[in-house]
Length: 265
Image (cartoon, rainbow, N blue to C red):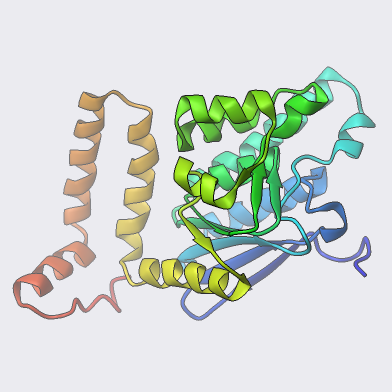
């Protein structure tokens, strides 16, 4: 049984630079307490400076991926300033994921509800067990999930996202995949591991600089008009082309050989 002295997060990095960060509050369904939010922000800030990191897998222990905010903690401090600060810190965690120069894969089992569903939506990629379920259920308690609405509405169609937000109903992993919240669905834990590994292996096979530049541009252009997005994309591609990794990749293609990226990643 876990105690208060056990770490809120577990961390592992392999030789390829695949980092696995695991939420470790199983007794509380990995709720995003103040301590958990701070631990995540600290971890993400460190990863942003870690050139050895190539992919982040966000996983969880216990029966649930994440049940959202810690409601007991929230109810104990009923003040407007406290709630503004809390939701501001949660937003900082979500945006830190987007700012990371490496792709982030949510590895989901059990339920992901409210801010837990928001956490999945904030990740770049997501793989879920077929038995996983997703909901933004705050409305059932009289609290519209306004913050989760931000990434949720950017993952799926407006009407599909709004339906989840105003009904609070669960959707299955298959439905989450159909709606664009999840990339892949796995039948069992072994298959879940395999799907996450497949994505991670594919990503680390590419030059880190190309992935980092591409991720930054991907999110930046989403908030721009089409014309401005094309200008930004063209500039990003031109800068990318000046990187040794891209020059080597194109040269290797022309010479019909594998690129020699080992030294340029």
